[in-house]
Length: 193
Image (cartoon, helix red, strand yellow):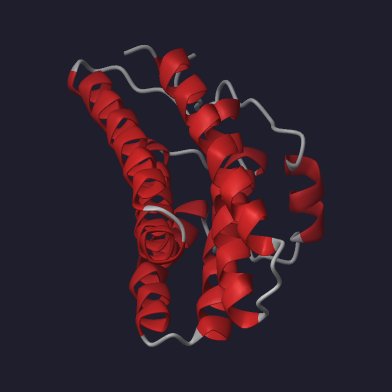
């Protein structure tokens, strides 16, 4: 797998639909703007978690997670892929997902699951850093994207449980996080250790 650039764009199945649904996004809003916005939203989500403002936490988290879908789609469909975005986008994802997951999983599920998620994410980060130090950059792969989807589902289920305590949401969250761990291992293996 190599670094995706504007010269070798690989589209994902959702790109055309998302680009069509959000064609109203002005051209002056670039994908990197959405990545920066996601970085700024992380402390806001954490504030709402800390104050137990669950509806606000769920709303801001969902919007922040969606900016990840939108910025990638815009980068690919508008040919606005940048090296900064290739590095900053996954970092923003890991910061958003990692901080919220640690807060919620440690609080509501099991510390061992939390530690496993953190260790795997740190291994992925360390591997990416090692590659960058050797001058090798790679783009996210389908395993990493699928991992992110399951993490968002898991976090969303835990947040929704705080708003509407439906008993089936916790098993959904546990299953989603379990699947995210499997896809994290696949992602790590495909990047090479």
